[in-house]
Length: 201
Image (cartoon, rainbow, N blue to C red; front, side):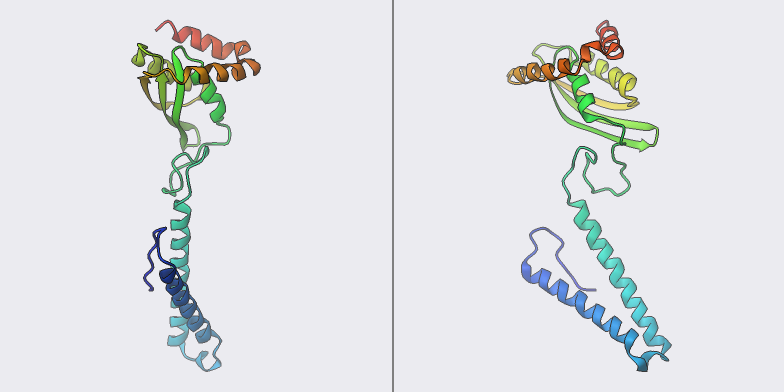
């Protein structure tokens, strides 16, 4: 089987060698199959199918490696490096989760929000919250976990909170709250009741 550097920085010479060797193996296998003199030779026909099988497996592996290099997105927040890792379900709205968390007291910024499904009815999430200076990080983290569980059915969540020393995101929060108000989040009784009850912690 030909050697090929699978790193992104692989030289064009290596890629050319890889393509040439794949083409050579493919042409030999096809020649074995189409050559009339080999039809009665079971050993040669078996070798041909064996070569095709090996080549197919190798090409599938190359495709999987290339897919694994894709950048993470909203639905596949951990990227494509783990084929068995479930993506976010269709009904999960990252925008709503983001806005609901941002509406919690003392939260001025959110980053690294990742949501995925462990199975069809079990969701998990991780998120980092930036808080106003001198905020109770533990209290806000607990509030966020309860909100994720009650509003978004995310049973397993890891919330990390830290105080924002520079206050450079407060303006961003105010701008974002305008969007929240435009969507009528104040009229969302379930969310408002949840936030009010969480503030009593």
